[in-house]
Length: 539
Image 1 (spheres, rainbow, N blue to C red):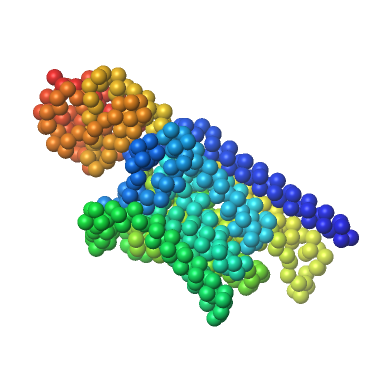
Image 2 (cartoon, rainbow, N blue to C red):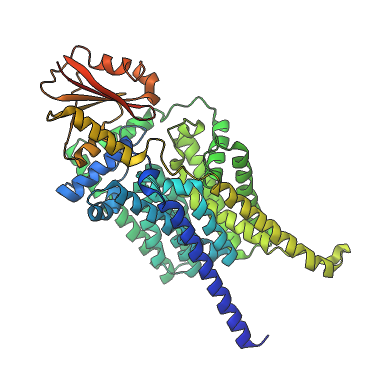
């Protein structure tokens, strides 16, 4: 083949790859933006975040803390709110507009994962990894509702891709980009701090291999800039701590000194369950939904890691280094979560906690992409064992390519047939807004006071839609016997927590909470499955 022909062939290959990537990104967008208004749940977490964003963009009230954690009495990082503030400002604090920004972040994670996988294993690895995250039922679900961990797919992918770029190109500036991604991941979820281990580890390894001289000093300077940005990102937290007698620090220390989350599962069993969830979640979703598929997916990740990291696998040196880094990162993640997030040892319906390890999802997609790409380009061994080299050269590559295609189609097919429903179980934001409208009709001109059962669940799921409709509400005093005056008392009861409430919703629990307050029931309805709204007026 002449040189011009080879150049044209290479250009055609690049064009085809770019078209394929555009098609994959379009698929990702289609899966995430369809029915966006109703896809995501709207409960206390979403109400809280929207209230904070509304106060930020409409009233100029700058938050110092991020969303509250589900464990302990401390908070995630405040950077999460600043990342979503532009969408809240542009949309006028519309939850659909904020959700669209999260969906866009999920779509943008696709080309970043492609870039990372391609730089390591070539075009096939990049396209496979991109396709897997584009159709992943877990990734789609994380892109369609308001929640602080749902930006992590993009932030952690940026951190990992930039770190690998810094390592492979020797350009120290990429370490600053990697640090920014890691800092954003930490702010979106406290357990995102675990991602610092792989990033810092590779940075130190990069500095060590450079030897004394200007290159090492450049890397260390970049690390210094990252440290400065990390400290700067927590200035709001420091301001809060100085004004609150270090309440966040004290709460975190109390949680750690108290042994963290209680667990009835032994250490080894917990390690196995956590490993299963970390490796399978990105590829098949919640492990209890499809245990067999989840186990196969976890084995596929382990096999891909072992094969592409080992010299016997025939992987290029660059790929081996990357896969060994990924393997160490996943091992570190599993060990850290086993010790620090014991709640992962059990699955509670309606209370997801796979977001604890969302920062590791890009690693899983890339590792599987590398494994499938390696299988696709597998070549036969030399015919030293007596096999006919002509027959082997025509059969084996075709068989391996077919096998790679089959694995890819199986993963894609599984995820496309297990997509999140187009309407959330609670009806999403439209249902919350409709429930708020019904409350306003029953309350008339009276002030509205909100109360929640269980008491540890906030009333913000209803407070925000009431605010959007022009009827800001106040939280009922802790003492239910406080005279209600002329206010309408609204009790929100979540049947998911009946065991904690000590009574059933739809009457017994709500009536007991207002007993002796001099109010009578005027309306009761189920705003969403298991979420009851009871409206009481004086008299």
